[in-house]
Length: 313
Image 1: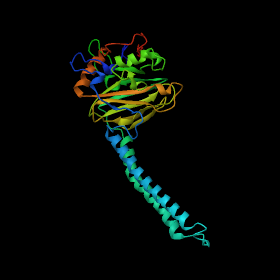
Image 2: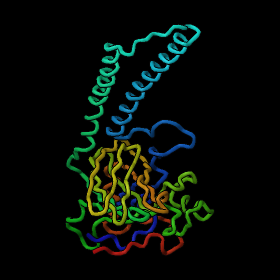
Image 3: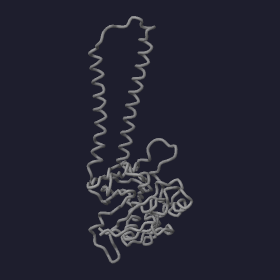
Image 4: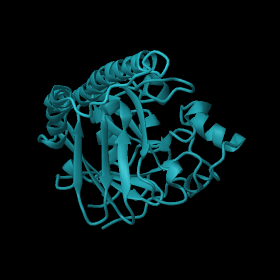
């Protein structure tokens, strides 16, 4: 397929000229967003994420009960069988019923956990037919996206398949130097992000409609990367020469952040993932604009290197 030869600014922070519906960054709630000092998971925004978080809570309860049980046993043994309370220790070395019990109990616990965890695993790995298919290619150090559905479609004059690179705002490609300088803070503000979104926000974001099955094909162009969005409950390694898949169906609109989760080089920490989940009408309007190469940020970065995407025939 052919990438859009020029996409300037943040694709998902643009105004949708054709539909009149604003796709401004501030119009969507930031849902999948890490919070300073917070504990726990990001809000589960897919069925997969709910299943994973429920499984985690179940295992936490089981582990907590085991820890309490073992701690009570230890305390009881210390108090009951110390040399002062029990000056004449027993001489036996085995207790067959006890050994059978502490062998069977962990087996039963593991079977119980497996009865819940395996269905969740199968649900993740059995990829459904995608209503929208996106190919995500990890590069050192940014993500390239192609909307595979559009690759074989018919295009009107001036239209081409949707494809773009997503660079972190503040990376060298966007005129920064990986520091939160006043210039980078202005880039974030111009793109509709907050100062706290540094290291999370990208120029050009993946845009998908709410309630649709999205399949993401993940690969790498150089080394192993990993495409992960915690609020969706998805994480998939991108291995050069292989095409892996993940899927999700977002249940609410909003802005969701993720990051490359496989150590991939010196700027591994600077290749975030930004996904915007919008209404179907807003998505179709964005898609129409993106196919015409008209998705631009009203106030683009000053540097020409912002996101000048080379053609990929």
